Structure formats: C-alpha cells, structure tokens
Length: 262
Image (cartoon, rainbow, N blue to C red):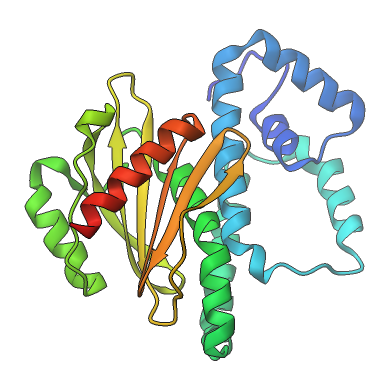
C-alpha cells in the first residue's frame, strides 16, 4: 500500500488492526479509512488474515502477567517501526509457532480417542473458517491445482486422504470449481476445494479424515458474515463455508452431501 503522502501510515494501520493505538489515534484512523475505501478494503483483508491466524493458533495461546506491559510498549513504538518489521515479526511468529508444534506435537497427539473426537467435531468449522479467510482472498494463487486438471486434483487429494474423492458439481447452484489444495485438517492430510460464482464470490469445501470421528447430522456455525455447514460421516468430516445466506449455503451443503454419498 502506498501511504507516502498520507496522514495515516502503514504502521498506523497495522497498529489499528492489532489494537495498539490510543483512543484518539484510533478515531483518527477510522475517520481516514472512511474517506479512503480502497485502503479500508485492504485493512479488512488484513484483519481477516489476522483473525484466521489467531484461530489457527488459539489452542496454544496462554496469558502471562506482563502481557499488558508488552502491549503498552508496542503501542508506544508502533508508529516508529520500519516498514519491513511487521512482515518480519509475522514471519518470526509463524516460525516460533511451528517450532512449538514440533516440540509439543507428540503431547497433542497423545490425547485419548474420546478427546480427539470431541476436538475434531468442534474444531472443524474453525479450521474451515481459517482456510476460507486465508485462501479465498488470494488473487493469483488461491489453489494449488486448477479446475483444468480436475481429474489429477481429485486423484492426488484422494490418495493423500485415502478416500475416493470427487469434486461436487455445483453449477446448478451457480458456482464453478476453481481448483483445490492440500492442507492440514486436525493434524492430518486434508483437502480444500474452492468454487466461485459469476460475481467472483467464493466458497470452500473442506474435507478431513479422523478415524475416531463420530457420525453427526448437519451442524451450523456462524462467524460474522461467514457461514459454515459441516457434518461427519464415518471417518470423514466435511465443511462448506461461504459469505452467502444460510439458506443458500445449506442447499449447497446438501448437494455436496448427496454427491459425496453417491
């Protein structure tokens, strides 16, 4: 974002998203965003990504006594950070999170089967939301394999899940397949299929495997304008996510269920 001649800098915007600004500066930034809709749209995308990352690592978060002092110090210095530092800090955070996962991964996987089942059931919509927020906002690389290689896509992802995968045909519902990608779901290989309508609105279908899953009927989860319908059938969990009406999403989810079962 080019903020060279603006009264609000890119560092101000990052501090605004992270809650590091005082009340007056926060109001100044909000007023500036109201007059700059392109910047406001980009800030909304940044916030969606931040919320997605917080959801992904929420299970590992814990509070320390000096957290408030750290935030206060960050707020005091936020406007004087070099432009490259927010990106470097984000990279370092992901590195640390990855290291923590490696250190504590065996402890996490050692949970009893009953806890795994409950965790997988409640965490599926959160993982679907995170995947949607992270990947649907991508312009150039939303998927790894495009719809022009659909046969290869479903074969590759199906082998990784040990499951005869198919990509539901949602043309009757107004959505066409863009492609898909491999991604982790509950610590195991999972798949995400992405669809788009003629207006550019996207939705995702997340598929994951867990041998300890219990069968469920359709369930619904909502987060702001984001809607998710999810269900677990045997060892496979499914979640359909999109920023469309609950009724439309339910119709699409039911169509996905019908085609997955046929």
